[in-house]
Every structure is written in C-alpha cells, then in structure tokens.
Image 1: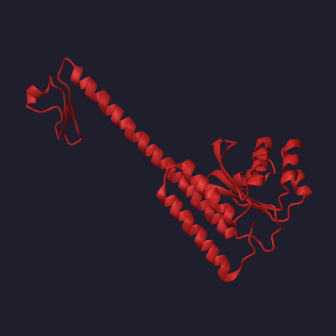
Image 2 (image 1 turned 60 degrees about the vertical axis):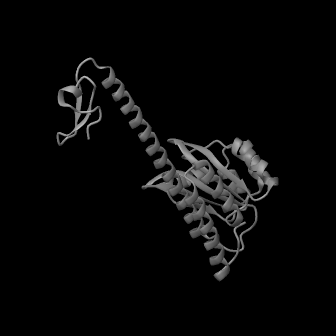
Length: 239
C-alpha cells in the first residue's frame, strides 16, 4: 500500500528501500534478475502491485517483470494483464506515461476511472475484480528517450499522497539498470564480433597463397601471413 508515513519514518523507509535497490543494481547486470528484484522491493513500500513494461517496438509494450504483495491477487493481476490490449494513444496510465514522459497517477480511482482506462469489457471485469484505489505510472527514460513504464497500484485508499519522489527515483534507477544491461550486452556482442572477425582474418592469412600484410595507420606491421614473413623476416603477428 502507499504508506501514510511522514517525517523521519518516511525518510527512513525511503532510504532503506533505495539502499536495497542500489545494492541490487550493483550486484548484477542480468536484466531479468534486476527487474524482478526491483518490483519485489517496490511492493514492500510503494504499492500492492508493481510491474515493469519495456517497449518491444514503437507502440508495443512487453511485460518484463511484475510482483504482488500477496499471492491471492497475483493470479488476478495476471488475468488483468492477459485481458489488457495496450493502446499507446489511449487513456490507460501506461499509455499516458509513455506518451508524455511524465508520471501518470490517480489516488482516487472509482468505477468511472476503471471504465475510462479499460481496454475492453474483459479488461474492465478484471479491473473490477482487483478493485484498485490508486495508481502511479512512471516512465523509464534513457538519454531523453522513454523506453518503458514502471507502474504501481494499490487496493487501499491513500491516507496521504504517495511519495512520488520515491517512485520516480525507483523508476530512474530501473531505467539506468536497463541501460547498463543493454550497454553490457552490446559490449559483449561487439567483443564476439571482433573475435570472429580476427578468426576469419587469421583463416584468410593462413591459407592465402601469396604474401599479405596489414599495417597500422602509422605504418607499423599488425599481421603478416606465412608467405610474407620470410620476405621481411617477421612473425605472423608483428607488433
């Protein structure tokens, strides 16, 4: 639930949650594990249910992680997700946050709200079963580009406004985790491409019937093949 804590209690809870989130992000670059950890941390303080949706393609979100504060509602939230048809131009908070790049929230959700944001009759029925009383949807932004949404839902009335600063910070850290994971994956892929290119080059050099040599820009030998080495007295890898 969005806790009505104030003063020192709120600050202590905020710092504890952010410290745990920071530790989780520092110990792994594996995106599925990081996202699962973030949603599980979020439901301890920031809502009864938390989900992370990442853009798979323009206008198409993919649910990458979700967690519920209790096992009873977990299956209901799964049913809600299955019945939901995402419309990037629609009034659902996921679409609004993705479109505007700003948090979308409502802490006084009623049946009129559910009818407005539902994507169809089955989705409306699923939302009514859950009876949410409030939500916050935070855009995940990387280098000025929104790449997904982290959403928080509560089934209890809020006695005080939610800590929007906290949920936005969780969203910011989650976006950073996604960025780090993608950059790491790109670096690994680039390293593999380089290794494959060098292996291919070595194959060409070793089988070429004529002398071949590769030079650095400053004229230094980088590689020569066996046919070329006797000419200059160099080994196959000249530094």
